[in-house]
Length: 254
Image 1 (tube, rainbow, N blue to C red):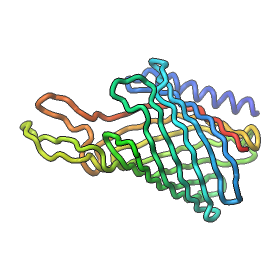
Image 2: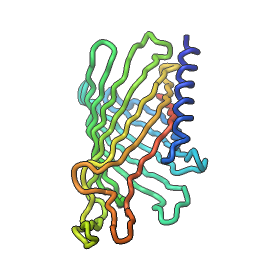
Image 3: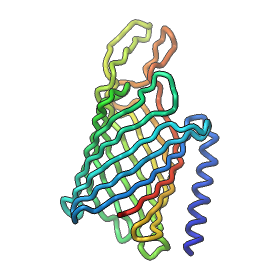
Image 4: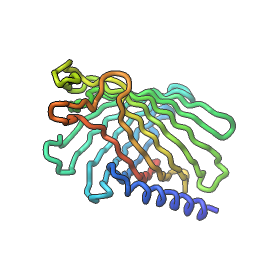
């Protein structure tokens, strides 16, 4: 039964991979390796490293370590803080080599019936390296998964969604329909959505791995547009950054 579960997961993963590599937007492979340690009954520390590879050019985009602390207030509520530098190594001219980010989060765990579980997160990110579209980024994350410990390797399908709000990006010049300059201001507002679906498996008490598909779409929601067109040059200075990800993640508890 365990082999059937693994084969089914790999077939799903392969199907999603083949479907997305043919898309015109950027498609990446994300591999993540992580470890965690329980310091006390309420305090955990973890380290994860994400490596991003462009599936069309087969080149590495970036490497992103992440160091996190999580403190359980109650069985349902928890607080956390992360430090996440990003090392850009894709050789794109003009790209910043290192980005620094600190984030704080609040988590609430709830039950949805006997087998389904839900996790809600509110996260605030501070980017110490100025990004063009934002300096602060806030998002709401909703994670829903099916939990049945009797399944082989505790087979756990899940969906994960994030809605992002950008704040304090670099000022962007806006234009009127006739080409004259209008306001120049930061494109603040709701501007990105991520959807993730996959499966998580636990071959042992300390080791788990995950296969997933993720898609990001940027949009003009509340606030100022981020893909503002200059009608004089017909150029969009900050086009939408949409991408797809095929992901593999492994985690070990020390």
